[in-house]
Image (cartoon, rainbow, N blue to C red; front, side, top):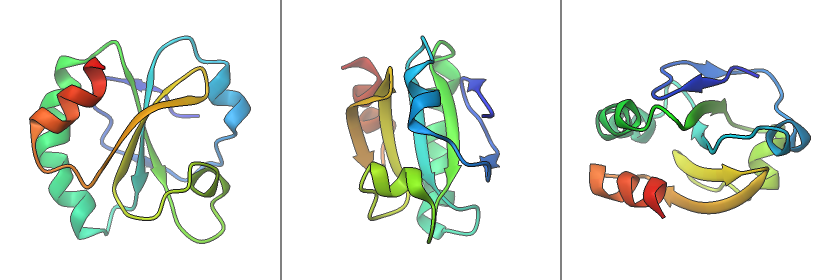
Amino acid sequence: MNIVMGFNATHSDEMIELSELEAIEEDVLLEFGTPWCGHCKRAQKVLEPVMNDFTDVAHVKVLDGKGKRLGRQFQVKLWPTLILVRRGKEVARVIRPETERELRQLLID
């Protein structure tokens, strides 16, 4: 699994298992989406500056879509969906964030 602390600009196509997330000590922000999704592209403008301030949080861009099990396990319906995970368990989520404030609140709670 491609673990990047702070902002990660690259989607990972590798299959990520829930058990892998449970083994990570740090908080992980999962970003479900695709590189071609318009909503995902727009979200990068607010995501990058926030994640650059939260360098102690791992950021994993999960390439989502048909047949992608992790997105189904977290019941992802819209892109981008950002889920804060602690030891494999969802702590909070934001769908299609539009402001830095939304993301900061997600990471602070």
